[in-house]
Image (cartoon, rainbow, N blue to C red; front, side, top):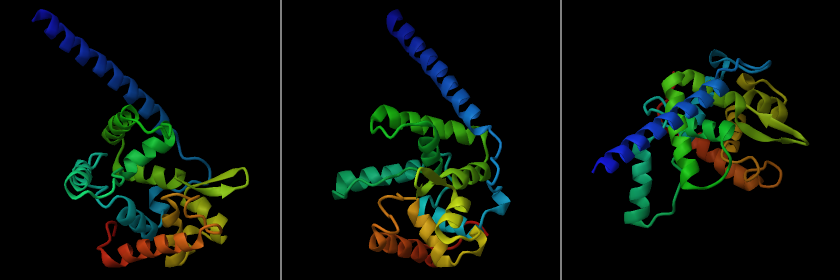
Amino acid sequence: MKWLKRLILLSILLFAVYLNHLDNVVKEEFSKPLEVGQLSYEQQSKTVINMLLLTEDQFFFDHPGVDFKEIARVVRDVVFYDKPLRGASTITQQLIKNELLTRERSFQRKLKEVLMALLLEASFDKKFILNYYMNSVYLGQNGSLSIHGFRQAAQFYFNNDIDKLTLEEMATLVALVKGPSYYHSIKQPQRLAKRRQLVLRLYHKYEKIVK
């Protein structure tokens, strides 16, 4: 049985080395200072923050980067109730996927995403992560120029500052998080309107997460 013990020890060692590598990658990527024009957390619109959290990740301030309860609910619904598979990625996982990973759909990539999300939350606080996401999330395309972050999107779509937008305009931007092409304001206006109404409905129905 010595070979089995050695194999287990070797596996643990290799996993520790791999985890340390991922940790270094995460810290290097997210230790960069804010770029010119990006907002600090205190400058972000609380209304947009609440719309985003209520729509994308209601338990953001409670989970460690991965919402294991939501994953369990998704598995339960698929296995026992024959419901379609839905996403269970947290904002932290979305940020990792957007900044460090490819769009490949595989178990290996998903595991890497989960591990890096946990490592990100172990090194940076919630407000930092949320603010980084709000400054970097892809929200559309202007020719060859990609629109990243809610501040830039507010200027592009409505020619206004984020905190001066109407509730409907803010909800429009949050709706685009799900997919700027799928919810394209010109090509798919009805689809976007339906998603926007969902954002507004959640915002008015539930208690605000950030006061």
